[in-house]
Amino acid sequence: MNLQQLEYLIALEAHRHFGKAAAECFVTQPTLSAMVQKIEEELGVKLFDRSRQPIALTDAGERLLPQVRVILREVERLREMAREEERDLKGELRIGVIPTLSPYLMPLFLPHFVKKYPAVRLKVTERVTEILIERLHKGLLDAAILATPLEDPLLTEHVLFYEAFVVYSSHPFTKESLLPEDLDVNELWLLEEGHCFRSQILKLCDLREKHHPAVEYQAGSLETLKHLVDAQHGVTILPELVLSTLTPAQMTKVKRFAEPAPVREISLVTHRHAVKERLLKALQEEILFHLPEECRRRQPAQTPLTWR
Image (tube, rainbow, N blue to C red; front, side):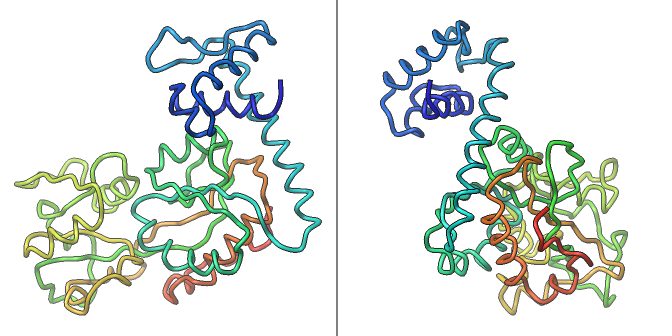
């Protein structure tokens, strides 16, 4: 067997479909199927149950595929060590970002990163936290930008900054700054299940038993929540980076929380055996450098600029 064949196994595990795995690996489906069968014959075990749809791992596959990921990770570590002998950064960096952060954070630093490191190929995936964690576990991502802490022993969290929550409301408030109890919870628009930001707001406003709106609209994006409020109905809570996208008229609908304002911790999360350390450190530094002043002031006291 060779490394390319091992990569076919990981792609098939991820997609559970020969056609999709073959497309990711830029080979034909018969080629990928034949290579997977060849490895199985060499090992003397079946790794995939082809009788099920989608394709499933066999018991042997469940035991052996983690070792395949270890092998590929160590090969990548060897390549990374070789790249450290070169002056310029290059290679591929696969990162994931949660949807409540991606549209507002990525434009701040991504153009600068691409210009500064033209030999680095970035592959960015926008998914909810649960999916990104799964992909980190499987080695399908090099890092993810997530709200933390996650308390996952397989992952390492490099805290980047703390992002404040703000109120966005169609109703005027006479108070200069607000408390969570100042909000009418039954006029509060929330994201749908699966978004960690929804869970944070439920906890902040103690809503699990009290949220009974006349219209329950579980939105898939913060932009939808903004438009609902702009239609002169209700209130929502937004993360601070959204403010950079608001018009002057929309900014009049923003109210800050009283100090200490609620915040969410944002981290660059990697597998505990992460490789590509030079690329990840460069990414981390670009993010920190291009943060808005409000977030920069809330950076952790010991920002991990030295990769650990």
